[in-house]
Length: 328
Image 1 (tube, one colour):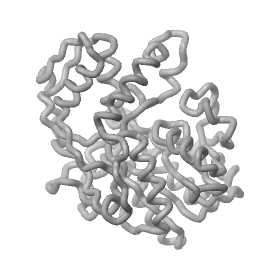
Image 2 (cartoon, one colour):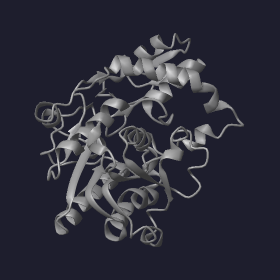
Image 3 (cartoon, one colour):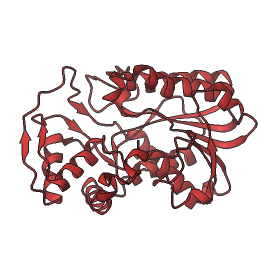
């Protein structure tokens, strides 16, 4: 995408799942990319290994104001803010860490960080929580159901407050469930693929819940398209296919694609007390107005992902390999 050529861009969380894929695409677009990573986390990072010599690495802890002040004099055309504690389930037992990583990193970055022409806040569909209307519309009041969701919503609200106060260009993006290569095994699709490839028993609920699953390239293309066409958008923007898939279908589909011998025990687990039964994006803005369409279907993305995890499975479970730890 020629639009990003020679643009000075900062990506926080650039060694993460979505952040690393975005960084690679920006490098391909000939942008001048700097990546913020935690101290020592870039060493042998598998996600950025192929391009780390093409980006500027900035080691900083966004939770620490002194760490951010050290990079205050830098200037960027764009800041893509993706740094976050991303595990929904674990956030219930790591509340302080979740808030520090997701909310206070944002307040520190916007209050003491580098200057920018446009700030792009990457949120999450988890923000919506329980909703009466399906698909999820950005005009609806969010009802976060986890510390993670609450922290991401708080972060988004603060970004909107601060950028409005400073009359700065801001875009808030809410990607819906994303999957693809290099994703942590704590996410549902990698977890299922790995268990199926290893022949491990799989226990699930009845799986009547629906989610949409978006292949990573589609999400990255959506983020870049939004940034090309929008300077400032007061409302958040959903990125999602609006294609609901039942969890039980997902489980059986992965079981089939992997030719797995795993025993499926669908219905073995109970639903969570505050189960979100449906989660899908109202995507008229990005689809009808901006012209975004998923280039890779759910089925195609799943096949690519299965092939990738099959290829790299040994790296996840080789006791001498740091690969698994570096994905978190």
